[in-house]
Length: 200
Ligand code: OGA
Ligand code: MN
Image (cartoon, rainbow, N blue to C red; front, side):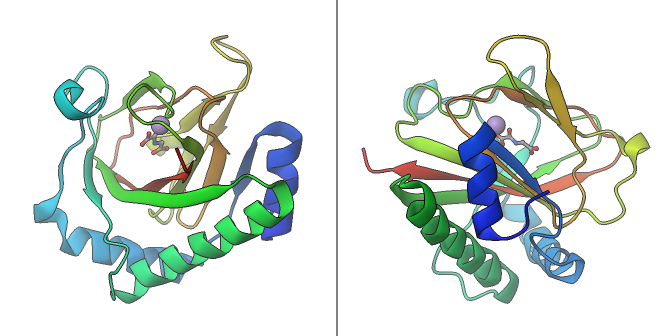
């Protein structure tokens, strides 16, 4: 599995997705989780679509989200945003992706919550190029469920890869190419999810 930005770039160039265990150290992920949970009262139910399309659709997704402020001085969020900025620079150098902006939110899935199969680069989100999900829960067991299922061939049901949402693991994939879903978990599941966009 790739670890350095160059290795992530190689994986993206070759197959369009990468799983990176240890992108953040466990302690760094724990600090980020603590900062997120301290803001838990400000989270809101995530919607589907944008503007007038924006509606909470419990049958599609059940997570609660809070967008990060890119000017935050909270140390773990700062570290995360700086790490993602470094990744952006490295990927633009290696792959000429033209990644221009990054938008990112905390997401918490209560036990039993899921996000049905979808594509991130949907109508109303022009420019979304690269999806990045960083997991925050330490000691995630297979039996806890909550996998990210990444479908590798368009709308086909197979093949897919299941990613265990373990603290510090980053998964990144081309937003227009890979349908994916979040399977329900037996415990609360926390992540920071973001999207690099090109200028539109
Ligand atoms: C999303 C999403 C995946 C995950 O927020 O769009 O697909 O593993 N998240 O949390
Ligand atoms: Mn998604």
